[in-house]
Image 1 (tube, rainbow, N blue to C red):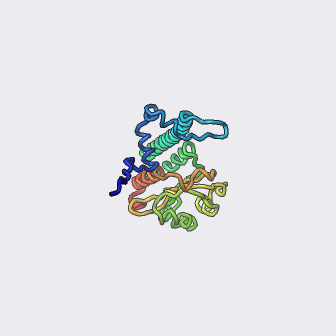
Image 2: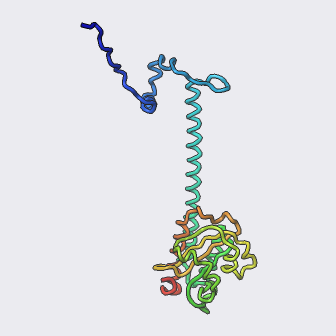
Image 3: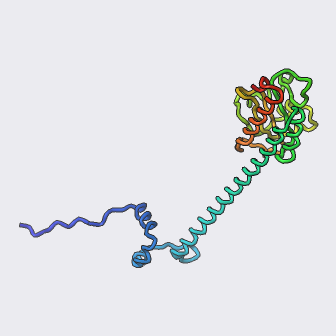
Length: 239
């Protein structure tokens, strides 16, 4: 009979690096309790000399703090921008609530948008024939070029921000002396159950209105103006 005994199986469980790393994160005092484990580690060094584990931790924490600080500043900037938009929306809402005539309404909105919103030109366009009692709306039945320039926003039914082509600027702001200088715009549809027109906010700054900017506030602005126009000139105009 052979005296050879089978070798006992290893009782050490097999762990992958992710499990080890997760365990060490959950037990940050491990190295303090087992310094021999730290001594056995092969801690690399950079070209400037040996780098201790503590130094690496400090460097990592500093990087994390920089990232958190940058994220915080980004959030603060977004909050301030949103606060500004709320203030602007409240300002134009007060103008609309107090409006009693269409031409006076559009004139007041144009002044406010120019002073507080960085808008160089404002145009309001609605379906229908020209009305002798309203001068500050361009009626699309009598303006085929403007009708064509608004095709994309009328089809989409949502605000569109971005580049304003020279042909569009000419069609929408033909009465202006420098309409060709308008390079970006926000196209905001008007209408309740369907799009019946638009208000266009134009700027000479090509970065004032860009495709990636949020449209929530201009969408709310369009809804407020639609309701105000319905009150002043009748539901049929913006139904």
